[in-house]
Length: 162
Image 1 (cartoon, rainbow, N blue to C red):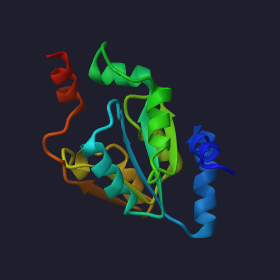
Image 2: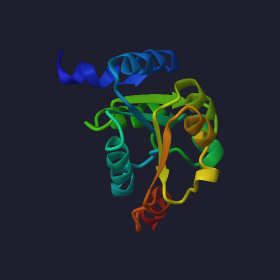
Image 3: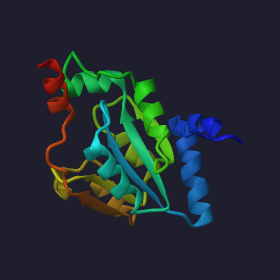
């Protein structure tokens, strides 16, 4: 199979992601999970994804749907559609699975998949990370990556507007 076909297969429904998780467990492989809007991919995102990928055998990314980005970021967002954002993430070699979720938080996704490692950026604490309790209760761990200063989608948008 050519890489182009493999890229499209990385974008999964929740049911497909559950089957992926089960297969990983059977093989004794670990899965790290991180999530976000990833509206305009920048070096901060790439650093965070790379750090997340280091934590397990596979990296699963939860991607906010267009509707949830609008709720979180405002009516002018997202800049790129969820299908574009999912495709961009799926094209990254360090991302193994992308799952779009409709809710404002990935709690249902995390509760359903129960990854081995939950990774978020340094602007969070264990107490404020959605799904941390569930992952820890299931024997997993939570990792907080440092923030890469100077990179923000909102700041990039503002710079473009000027």
